[in-house]
Amino acid sequence: MTKTPVLVAGAGSWGTALAIVLARNNHPVFLWGHNLSHIQQLQQLRCNNRYLPDITFPENLEPVDDLQSQLNKIRDIVIAVPCSGLRDVLNILAGSNKSDLKICLACKGLASGIQLLNHQIVSEYLGSKATTAVLSGPSFAAEVAHGLPTAVTIASNIKTTAEYFAKCFHNEVFRTYTHDDIIGVQIGGAIKNVMAIAAGIADGLGFGANTRAALITRGLVEIIRLGVALGGRQETFMGLAGLGDLVLTCTDNRSRNRRLGLAMGKGTSLDVASRQIGQVIEGVRTASEAMKLAAKYNIEMPISEQVYKVLSGQITPRDAVQALLSREPKEEMD
Image (tube, rainbow, N blue to C red; front, side, top):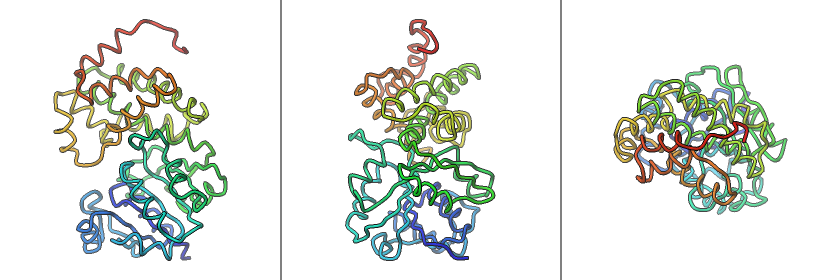
């Protein structure tokens, strides 16, 4: 049975994987990206040869090069662009006459310079014209596209919006859970990228499993501190969008944030490592924004701080680890 059409904005690996899930669930799907030559290649090859080369598109998945023209026939929009491109997409949506948009944000990061979460940016651009959900959780794009079992969280301040997108995505291999803590789910998805860089740096320096486990555990403490300060709930971070995503990105080399940390721990510069990875690494920008939020809310985030200092060239990776180890002893629950 044909279902409601969905536009997926963002033709990278994650946006393509989500478009494939929706298409397999019998939604007509329009996959848009800002790079015209890339979209033309998707149209010609019927696969995303750059990011998911061995996955053929379902017949009901159509790559499109004009976002504006699709808005006349589509109400449901999944945004899976890097956070740096979110406002560009929203600016186009704001210029449409649609007043009943349903938006699902699949961006995991923090936008630069404004100290707002992604759903707040949507509200700033679209106001009452849209209801918003966020999708997060431990989910590598390639595994999702290959149909390997995956579970994610879809959160919204409006219960029916979370339930709506959960139903759109849910199938026998892509399980969706709904949540009402849209702040906590976003903070978990964003700050875990910073922790993955930290874990990669430690492994690149050869510090082993003990160090990695400590970084993950103490990294979760930092995520909770920031999330609760912003209005999230502590128990959210024990779920898929918190602990689940954190463990995945800190321990598996398919995480581009972890791979960046590994390279820098082995002595590669940020610029060279970024070029080698060849995709947006959200943790780089998020580390800077996390420090601004930590200062604003007077929160200690020592791991995030050291990652930021390494990324900004203030200290070496080895100095960052030494700075963490030389901190005064304290109670664990403090």
